[in-house]
Length: 298
Image (cartoon, rainbow, N blue to C red; front, side, top):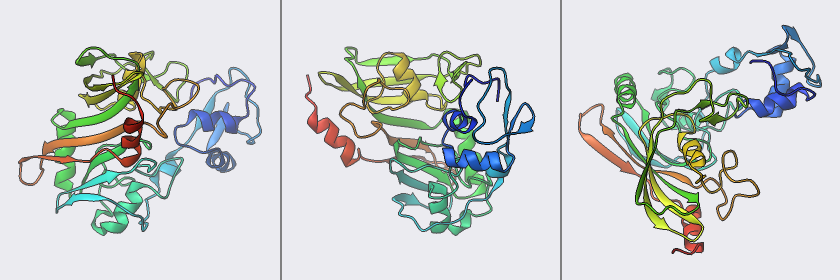
């Protein structure tokens, strides 16, 4: 990590905030295990940072651990010898990482489909794309090596059509829109993605108005690129943050939604086995539908 912006703060608290999906307890174990250095040397979790100190974090040992099968509920939309389609619930992390080693979608998949074990990527077998922890909806998982390569290539070539349903703050009067700000890690706050970045990457998001409400707009959102937090960052930068977004949304509450109102509704791609264009969908979950039922349309 670069020079800190956390002068005066405890190292464990600073890292827990800066490292995505890493708990403070996990950070403390990393510090104790020697995976965190300040100016090249080990420190205690209670160490208070001084401006200009360089913090180095080694995640190699954590990331190389192979995930284990776990008996967890899964909503499978489709399965064959090449692909698995999953309807991911909100709150489920897709794969193990520095902050979580168990109770992820990958752990559940390995239990349900033992043939995934040993496939690539080693630490997240079969995973070709992700949904944020709070985002619900349809995902495709590669079940064979040929499917993994094929789907990765389709994603790279932008042949995979992903459509989301999202509720955003504010009024949108036009029927369609396009957002194309490059995004990347925030220049100062490295745990956030932003249009204010020193390493911009191309990003494009299109949207279509489905229903206008007094304080909100219900949209179909189509990301043409697949950058981390792209939809959330683009909509926030446009002045229409997603309802319930605790990271990029409005301060002072989530509004009418109990969680991030973003759902991956449809996924279209070329089947890696048959070559045919296929489409899979997931209906809007009851908790999000209840939000729409409570608010007043224009």
